[in-house]
Every structure is written in C-alpha cells, then in structure tokens.
Image 1 (tube, rainbow, N blue to C red):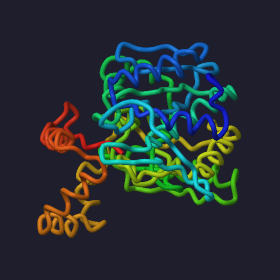
Image 2 (cartoon, rainbow, N blue to C red; image 1 turned 135 degrees about the vertical axis):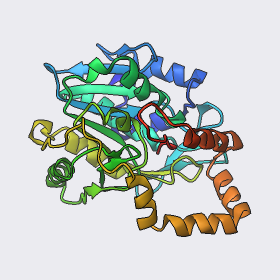
Image 3 (spheres, rainbow, N blue to C red; image 1 turned 90 degrees about the horizontal axis):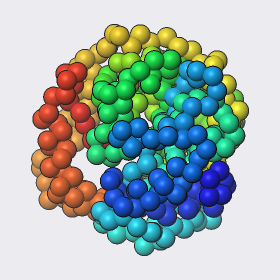
Length: 321
C-alpha cells in the first residue's frame, strides 16, 4: 500500500485527513496517497481509477471527499472496543469514515492485486459529482461492468438493493453477495436491504446490471459524533481479499427502471410521515440537531436546490450518504 497504509495505523492515518470537496487538503491527499499507486490515472473531473485484471467485470467504488467545514489534520483515537472517533470533535467536523473506510479497503484490495475496476470518486458528498461526470461523459468506461459495489454504507450488515434511482440491484445479487461475505466470517450478518439513499453507484444503475452499497462499519456520519468499528472494517477487508466476485448472481436488466414511485412509498412504510410531522412540530429542535451533526445553512440550501431540480433521467437527486 502506498505510504504504508496497510493495517490499522494506515486506516487511522486516512481518517486524520479532513477532506472537503475541492479543497487544498483533498488535492494534497490525492497526490500523496492515490497518484503514487502504480498504474492509477485521473479523468477529466479528477476521479482516480485503476484496472486490475483482463477486462474486469466488477467495479469497486468509494469517494475521496469527506464532510468537513475546513480541511486539514484532525486527531483520531480508538477506544478499547476498537471504535474510532474524533478526539476533539466540534460542529463542522466529522471522522470521515464516510468514506475513508471504503478508501482504505480498496487500497488494501489493490495492494493484494484483486481483480476489478477501482474508482475513487470526487464530490460524492456534494451530489455524486464525480460519478455523474463519468455517467454523462465517459459511460464507455462501464461497458464491460456487470456489478458496481460501493464501500460507502453505514452499519455492519447492509447490502443495498434500492437507492434514489429505485431498484439498483436484484435481490438475487444482493443475497449472493451477502452469503459470500457471511461464509468468510461467521460473525457477519450481511443481508439485502432496501433502505439505501444515494451514493455513487446510483449513477450507474441505468448502465450496470447490479449496483449496490455495502456497510463498512461507520455510524452517525457527517457530524462530530461519527464513529467507525475498526474491527469490522478490518474483517471486511480480509473477506474481500477472499471473495470471488465472478460467482455472484447477475440478474437485473439495467435498461428497465423499476418502481418509479418507490422512494416515496418507502418513506411511508418506514414512518416517514410521522418523522416529517415531528420536524414540523419542533423545527427549532430539528435545526439544532442538524447543526450538531455539522450540517450548515449552505448545506441545507443545497439540499433544497437538489430536491427541486429534476435531472435528465426524471428522478430527483437527494443528499448522498
């Protein structure tokens, strides 16, 4: 691994960089930790990519930006249970395990020469800017890809089947991936989950058959109380080094967009109406909680803009997770 990022120390080093999109810190991080990987290249937007193997069929995805008001160094600690956290977290800061954890896992897979197309996206936290750029300007990059797997989900056991696009991967694919991971580690409890929101693989759902997002162990992302289960992250990397992605079930037809109204129906199924009503009844409390999570007024305005803007595929982009 470049800069000796192998092991727990390497993961903590990645987390020590607060990297808001298009900041000097993000650019320095990419130069120091990605551009020195042999064979890696950048596209016109600055996404980094690397291909291992002969015409790989699987895309591995993460993003390099983190939620932070200011870029720079931040102190990170790990408790006796293997949970990483900020040592002095304040509003406007986050641990950046979203998506430092995914970035570290992918660098570990590259170091072990695991086959695949590796994409390190820019601008995910600003609305999946890097993946949207690829989908619109260089879709041929994805021509041979059957499955796009993002390491960018909170929790310990989700294999996401639905995002804002609607269904982005088949239940058969999600079940086969979950089963393959659970066989690698008896402590894993991966299972298909339909409560995804929006990450980079969502942008490829009209091109790539199976597009999912995989839990990597972080919680309470985007704020100063974000944590990462480092042990789970280490175990997931170990499992990925043994996974045979060629055995996963490919079933979904990307030319067919299913369940156009699914997002709003899901909100009702999961108590969304009750939540909206509670926020309406207690707006000051909701605003305070957002502020404590590091969400600024500008972030909120951007989310409102994104919610109102129909993109050219007819769905409304939402804030990424």
